Length: 256
Image 1 (cartoon, one colour):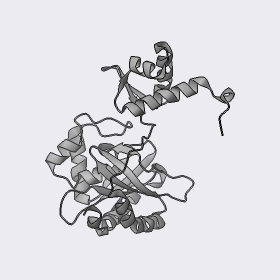
Image 2 (tube, rainbow, N blue to C red):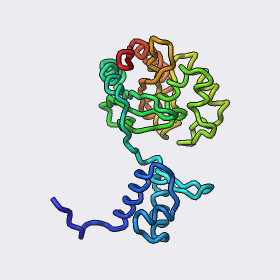
Image 3 (cartoon, rainbow, N blue to C red):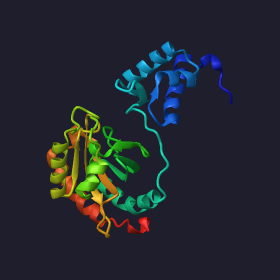
Image 4 (spheres, helix red, strand yellow):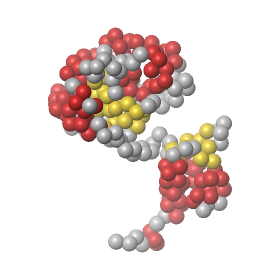
């Protein structure tokens, strides 16, 4: 069915074209390039981009004077071939965790400096936290990412954690020394925490799914929920259960 153009709001349509240009470009873009790619006057493109910045859909680097996709836009990327098999192996454990705690259970894999959510079992509560499958978040601001990092050696952690850690919320740990201390504490207890570091109002606890080979983990499982339901005591209880559960998941067949 064709769309009736009378009902298309032109500024919204053009704003979406600017977003599409940023997604397609895959790299930060200058205002002149964005205006040219959407056939918009620079002054009009600037106003639309400014509005998108105010809404969190676009970011702007004043140093380079370039725009990039903002934190409110999730760009789907092709998943590695082994992701589907890891999902199949971990699914029974995820369902058990969801039944036990009735909070959202997430499964993620590492891709460079990011964590990618590859599966999720949602909570039946009206109030719950939920990530989108395919969404990417930084390793350093997520419990899933930190759980994987605690299984790596220092040289690999140096490569995986950027020197300048971006603050996703006011609670994100961005001081490198403080962050490494947090990883050391996580390693000692065998689970990692995200205390509103990736999303305000949400807490998360995660454990790494290790490999029999002894190499650093590439996958992790987590439980997330709203702060009011995720007390310190509850996080500790969930963390102990998660550590045991993650340790029982054997994904070696998925990686062969």
